[in-house]
Length: 123
Image 1: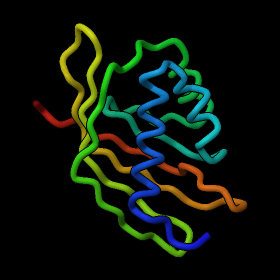
Image 2: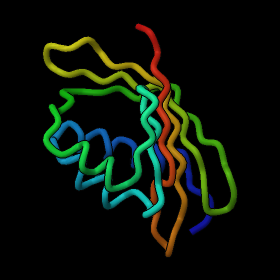
Image 3: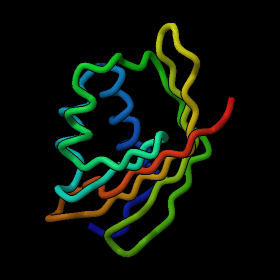
Image 4: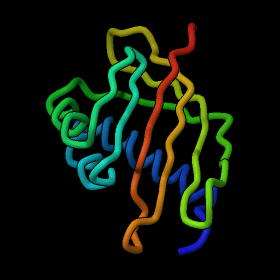
């Protein structure tokens, strides 16, 4: 597979958010992330694939989300980053808003999430 396209990356992000809205984020991200992938969360935590998957099991689901201002940054012929603004909503909570960066790479012919980083935005 050659360069990952912007729309393909947005679709992967939407599938992840959809999984979080359906309380199946742990299963989804365990499958999507490369074995050595990490997520850097808004609280400064740096978690690996299994820690992320375990942390998403049983958490309250998001009721909706928005992806805006998405842009693709090519890294090489098999990796690209998607940078975007996200707003997500849970019942009874203030909206979550953050700038997101997800780096995807093709490993063994399959697109995998290698790195995800979140920066909180004040609303």
